[in-house]
Amino acid sequence: MLKTLINELVEKWPELWPILAAIAVILAVVPFLGLYMTFIERKLAAYVQDRVGPNRVGPFGLLQAVADGLKIFLKEQVIPDHVYTVLYFLAPTLSLMTAMFALVVMPFGPVPTNYTGGFRFIVAPGIDIGILMMIAISSLSAYGIIVGGWASNNKYSMYGAIRSCAQFISYEIPLGLSIIGVIAVAGSLNIEHIVDAQSKSIWDWNIFWQPLALLIFFTSALAETNRLPFDLPECEQELVGGFHTEYSGIKFVLFFLAEYTHIVTVSFLTALLFFGGWSCPGIPSPSTPEGASLTYMLLGLLVLVLKVSCVVALIMLLRWALPRFRFDQLMGLAWKGLIPLALVNLIGVAIVLSLDLPKHLLVVTAALPVIAAYYSATQFNASMAKLNSERSVLSKSRAMSYE
Amino acid sequence: MSNKKTKTVKWGEEPKLGMLDALYLPAIVSGLATAVRHAVSGKPTTRQYPEVEPEIPPNYRGVHRLNRDEQGRVKCVACYMCQTACPANCIEIIAAPAPKDDPHWKDRDKFPATFTIDELRCIYCGMCEEACPVDAIELTSVYDLTGLTRTEMVFDKEKLLSVFDETVKSGKDPVRTNRGTLGPASEVAPTGRQGPPPPGRGKHG
Image 1 (tube, rainbow over the protein chains, first blue to last red):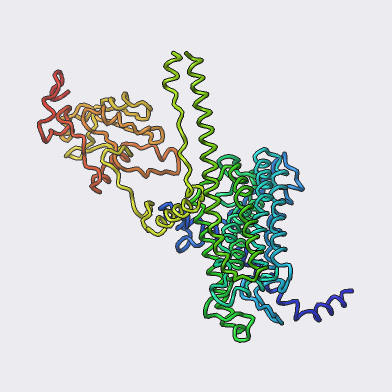
Image 2 (cartoon, rainbow over the protein chains, first blue to last red; image 1 turned 30 degrees about the vertical axis):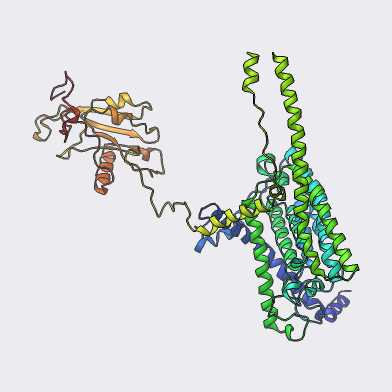
């Protein structure tokens, strides 16, 4: 039994080691990234607020993240009396597991489409349902939050979980609809192929012909990560801590890590789907023979990481630029704003593709939000005018009754 | 009554929503621009405290000190005014007659044998400073008072005099009340602004 297993392993080793190596890279980098993203976020927040930020532990405060990590690992494990113990422990695990699992099909460096052997920057290359699987898995992370909120047996946690559930369901739809256009043009769900389709020139990047899709995708993705301005599941001012109110110590860290992993995933997806991934003018595609060299691979990795860090920085800056949505506004934005826009965008893509028109015609979809804004403004003003007239009638009748 | 009420109630109208407001994006961009402007301004308002000490205003009420006169004696005449004035009851004085045969103490009747202030009980209101007729007790600008035990924070006469020595040496806290010839140990006012001493209080109180 054992012998056959070992034989099998030895036989499969050339195929197995790149997978294990990629898994090791992800497992090593993601917690580290999570730790340091908190540090970067604190620093960035400090700079935005004209402060200095953490600067006491190590040079420039660089060891602050390590100190925080160590501290929280040594924290007491507080388990409140009133929780459903099994679910209570399951929730953070579920949350982080789904967040990490979504990274399986995500290329974190240049991956050639005609992969043969050796190390590559992805755990599972050539998965033909890539992006679909990623979205499916990452939306499973709602379970972590809902189970956590339910198991906490606490009204604030429960409210956080309910909000999270509603938010996830609403924003999954525009998220999925917005990338259908991208998928349709690339003709594949495989992320490597989608990036490869953008690699010919900078004008092939999806942002230049699908700006509206980018807007919708980024907004919905932000809502999926529970970041400001969509952080209603965990807004401190209303819900104490939201779904993680009852969590402390390492269990809280798992939730936290899951959230930051989501941010990383979303940033990678934005860069891969809309900003050409690792493609950059001057660097040949890794699928071509000259682009397969190590130098170009590393350059591509650098380009991708740069793009991703720009998106991460944008997400972090948005936190300090925008106030939180009210819940009805949040729902209204998804159902009355983003979903119709995504559908219209999809129709545009379908027309362009079926009539073989140049795809850059789709830039005109950027005008759609303006039209939508004009429509919603007129609607809003009309409803306000109606309300005001009703109010004035009411106040007049009140005044008469007073007299 | 009701008529007045209708007049005071005003229905405010919400501002009209423009197309650009409904688009959200201009507001988001301007918000981001503000954030980025502050992020790159490089002018944090944080004061790096232990390295850069704050500038304390001259009327700050910090740790007490007992002033010395020109001959180096404690200025206090043990009149109990500060102890009586103290709302927190943190001052405790035991007076003793000044050694009359000692030429050094010739002009004094009393002096404090012990003078303790519980710095933990003190509320730093400055009423002792106001009550003192001879400007002997003053609050300094020393704000970073720490100690490891409670007994350590009960300052006795020697400690309070050493606070005087240190603060005067550092030049941060010159003797500042200087209200004039109100008592035997008090200094003569440099200006005549204070006027003559109140009646009934001679040179020797």
